[in-house]
Picture 1 (tube, rainbow, N blue to C red):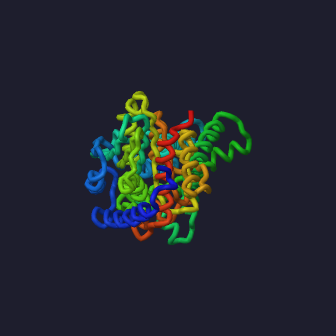
Picture 2 (spheres, one colour):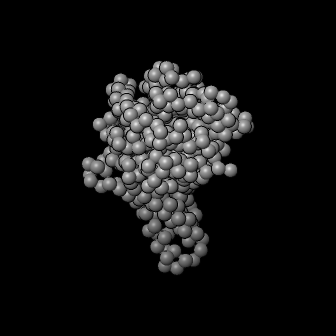
Picture 3 (cartoon, rainbow, N blue to C red):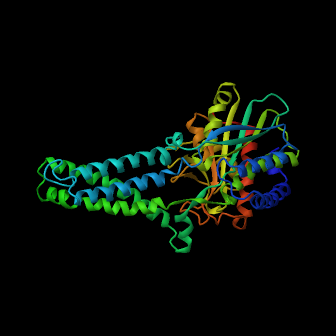
Length: 435
């Protein structure tokens, strides 16, 4: 069967089913912090449905620290604020007097510059590269990855995995208040000031330390005697970083990412309802936990299944679906993790071509330029993956805050996403990846 022959009524029924299911999940289980019982209950709820039309379902457990990924916003900002103002106090108490020459601010610059540099390093490891750098310092909980398989009638020669994550995010206060204050780019402005001033503080500290040992004229005199106060500006900007994440408020996660979760679930559900059976293509659903905790579930799945997916001769590709809401931004995200990860271009192009087959030829290749999707974890591990998403990147008013509820769902966007996913499955079964 080709996508053009697939019954439209089945797709529409599954869109209605998805809206009802997402509403029910949120009302029944509430927000789903990574690794908590609500996440696991949601996955078990999904499994009960999928057992009726899948050949195999199951869970794989793993350990993760849900707060480790974003808690650097508290520790880094608090450390910099304390370093700046404690050092300033010690300067005025003459504690640093005579250290490093005649300039009382020399040691203060060394300390603050070092603390800010360490903070930038931690931020890079956690948020830019998504490394589990801080995880050993935090309490571990058990997370679960849920999978379901629909096997072909014959030998498995190809395998396509449709993946979504069911956990939801801690609230990002900047995003929540941006709509209230009517400043759409509030997050970008405040984060830009925070990161920019941090880099500037490191530069100021380095130049001032050099000026302490080198004659730089009037510029050197200014840096030695007045530049420290720029660190105070950095410290004030760090207050917004400290307040950035509200760990006590968790998004309902209707769009991000129960829409992606049910895109995966309904992919198999729709194939079953239409009586579609593939001869050599296995279709797998993967519902991860821990995406909002730094892609931890996807990283664990990739680690556990890399050999299976790369060494057994079965062509395997993973399509991650993450938020189907803003149709104007429905794209294939072939670059990820703030642009540092490039997904497999063959598979990205296949998804793009499949979208055109489904009548959606206006999709573009795009970049997840702030944050990441589970697809990045798979690609980093050496697996073939890409991401399909439809979310305003400015960001959307519901992104990572309490507004991401079932009343914010967009059935038209869900339907379009379902069509692209189905078409991708049919095209992958027919053509596989271009060699």
